[in-house]
Length: 153
Image 1 (cartoon, rainbow, N blue to C red):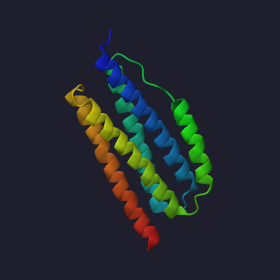
Image 2: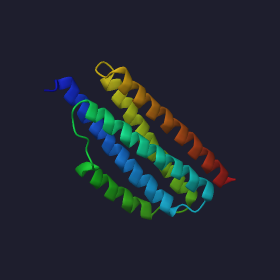
Image 3: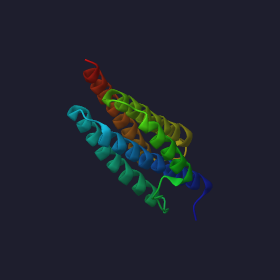
Image 4: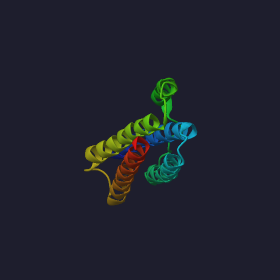
């Protein structure tokens, strides 16, 4: 039997995992639309890191003796529908990359929120993994800003 702290952590990890799924879907849709090969390479790299993050978070959830979610959930489906409509209006690689930066920034904020809210309950391994994800998100944002600068030149 799990205590309430563990249940809260698992619920938050599953929420974060749903966000990873949404991030993958968004970045993948941008990758399909972007024409610049440098930007496309950056998006490929981000997708690979999302796959790793998905595995890490799923393993954390399993370590708590629970089952990871396998979808974005109802709220995620609504957000994806909204994003799909919004994406139809995005024109050009630079705008795609800027929207990708916003998406990754949301993921980073969610990871930081998880760390802040759960810091008194999570173990060092979970904290290290979440901090590593935050760090990777920061690198992705930096690299995408570099791509935007190149596209603006």
